[in-house]
Amino acid sequence: MFDLDTLLLGFSTLIIISIFIARISNNLGVPVMLLFLVIGMLAGSEGPGGIYFNDEEMAQHIGITALIFILFSGGLSTHWKVVKPVLLPSLSLATVGVLFTAISIACFTTWLFHVPILISLLLGSIVASTDAAAVFSIIGARNIRIKGSITPLLELESGSNDPMAVFLTISMIQLIQANQVSYLELGMKFLMEMGIGLAMGLLLGRSVVFVINRLKIPIEGLYQVFVFAAAFFIYSSTTMIHGSGFLSVYVAGMVIGNQNIVHKKNIFRFFDGMAWIAQIIMFLTLGLLVFPSHVLSAFKTELLISLFLIVIARPIGVFISLIPFNFNIKEKIFISWVGL
Image (cartoon, rainbow, N blue to C red; front, top):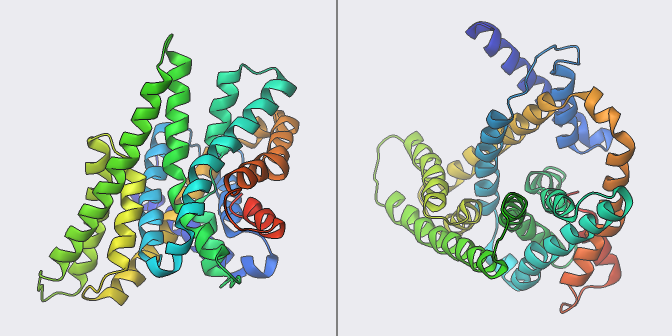
């Protein structure tokens, strides 16, 4: 058991190393999130760091907490006037696209590795969504400017597809564990979770705007603290009434970010920093959780599934979900590969 000083020293060292890595990642041409993950693996029990960590429940809690900050910050920086024209294709990508990506992965793993179809669907559901942290990081940190509506489309999709992936994953687990599950019931549950998440995001987002403009606190820093606490309140309260907490926190962030609020610039800067801290901690934790020897033992299987996801499954989901919309082949291919 480490003492507090050792824990703080190790934690701060990993954060500082990650910040320096983020600084040089653009020159290396490597996604910064991948480098954070590698740092975590090197710090783990099978790396030079020797930190033994296998608490999956704690890693899940850290990941959820980090994702709250990432999605809320992403919502704050999303301009409604920019994303409004791509609302429908983004929602199609976040739902239909994720579904067909998951189904494609399931068919591939069942056919090639003879895995039971429900287990394959569970795997597909887990990996089907794009990574909001990666998308926001790549587009924001590299100041990518893409002509047309591709950038807002990618940002809105990455911020809104996690609820679909979470729903599919939980549904597959229920199907595996239960003898009989009504597909109609699952469909109604999905609509209920999304509806509650959307409604709570709109309601609580507007409530935060109303309150923050009337607080009149003499201490400026407490405004950031208020919004910080509000993000957790929005997620947890929505989840407790069986809504999608991830959707609600993203929508609330978008509502707040598109309104005139006091100390708006400082609040934005605060959450931009918090989102970066959340991304670093989340990927470091995931890296610590990885045992390279276990990964290498199934490397060929993992590589085949990853290649299939990138080259075939994700493009299938994108091309099908964007059929009703006016995007050319080059744009669809680009959309297919971002965030993976």
